[in-house]
Length: 283
Image (cartoon, rainbow, N blue to C red; front, top):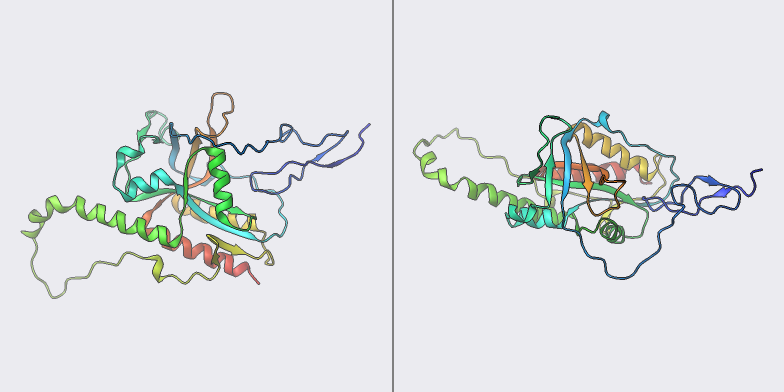
């Protein structure tokens, strides 16, 4: 006989109460039957192998499961790995040996992982939280995955764009004298397009490190997040992160699917997209 039906006391990865019902005096569902205990002792960051599977993977290969959500205020945010950010800013690919590309999903015969050497694109994640500020949620990600992360704020993105631009300019200097010999003065010469900057943006919902959603619109916070994911997956494809910091399932690394490989120069446009979406759902 089933008695005492109640909701599981566990908390989901999104920081929300678990909605699975349990009975017979149980406090937790089968997913939370071993609740996490809070350990305030310092944790050692993990700099071992971490890799991206597939690069640009069509979204239909791995669609997320969307659960019903309540209308709660919160934030959307975008971040990346601190070591990746610093490596691109300092043009030090040797600092990225821990991050590798695995193209075996798209090319089964190409099973060899390659070290990340791309200085024009960046791996980033768009997430959501119902906490009062984004940094609290980022701290939880660091404790879970054991990798330092950095919030891609407008200021941090502008630094990244400037650093990436300098890298490309310096990389072309060895051909400068050769190119100069082929150039001729022309009154109809077109000017080079200016690289977008976050300083040009008007972000109406950005505060406390993220884009605020008041929970009063027609879409719940997680539905807004999922809609943005779908748009970006359609444009950029999907990268699956095999995380060496999280607990393994058997011998396999845990997979994070909400990551994107995005051109650095597109990041201001991504911020504007998120802001426009959140603003449309605020009242």
